[in-house]
Image 1 (cartoon, rainbow over the protein chains, first blue to last red):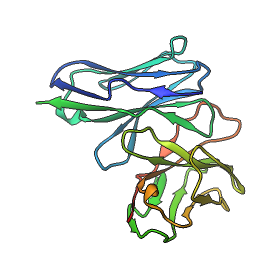
Image 2 (cartoon, helix red, strand yellow):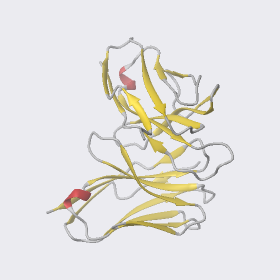
Image 3 (cartoon, rainbow over the protein chains, first blue to last red):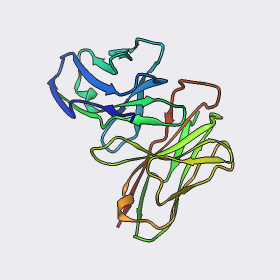
Image 4 (spheres, one colour):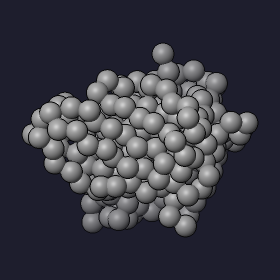
Length: 111
Length: 115
């Protein structure tokens, strides 16, 4: 069965730290992997999309990596800020019609 | 550029009532889908469509109907609302057939409470 796991479920770090969020998935034959951000009571904001043929993508202070052979992706956030506090969701495509989602990591950045 | 538009944003229903959640996209995407999000769980696929006139069931289809008469619109119907359908619903679209590894775009969600 194709599954996506995000550990830890919650993470609290002081402002300014660099941090890594983890996403693991079964079955390496993915199409792509997307990282999303969700603020409380709000919608989904797409952060980064990594295609199956790519190893990493960068946007500002965010860097996402993909290692299909080990079934892992990481989202690196540099110089964290209180405004980065949100839930981060990892979603994997093994087809064009469905995303399989992790349950998310709730990130709290302490001022 | 509106992207994916969902209405309403919030809704309260009584058990047994019916309603339709609306979803429209203006990107000419072939693939559209509905997900529900429940606390502590990843989003789960309810129904999806690969083009006008073509729909199929996802992981949790019971209690929901869909139709796709146009490329732009993909409404989700709750036939007889139950408290277990209290959730946040997201509509998504992406380019479809013949194009692999495309990005999915999401609406802002509909928060539904069934009492």
